[in-house]
Length: 166
Image 1 (cartoon, rainbow, N blue to C red):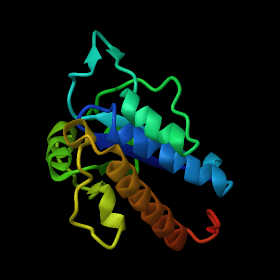
Image 2 (image 1 turned 90 degrees about the vertical axis):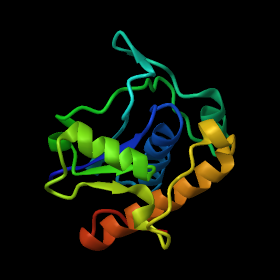
Image 3 (image 1 turned 30 degrees about the horizontal axis):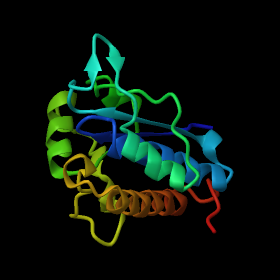
Image 4 (image 1 turned 90 degrees about the horizontal axis):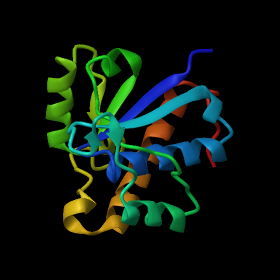
């Protein structure tokens, strides 16, 4: 069976995209279908990856995950590469700027794989605001959770039997 390969993307890979990675993994575990997915996250910027070593998840982002019983131990920032386009089925960005940068880094988007996470919700044009700047990690968590649930629901509808929702 082919695995669904999902890459979440934000600017620095220390707040929103790792939150999405671990929220989505948690949803998959609850539905007993984590083994059918490869889920990761990456940055469009290299500012949190110095000499090949990535920064850990930003402490307030880690705290909000832990408040919801989700661990992100060992996650380090990595930068998006052109090769990731072929490696993943979906490259899900947190905002319009991430989409533009991902398309640039990947050399285009001929297969329409690069989308915003919230495109799987009833507010498809919205961005997940960057809590690095807003300080509102709760709002980011809630938006990301909504996007991840919408993504999972969409995948369930297109791949009947993959996972079973609540």
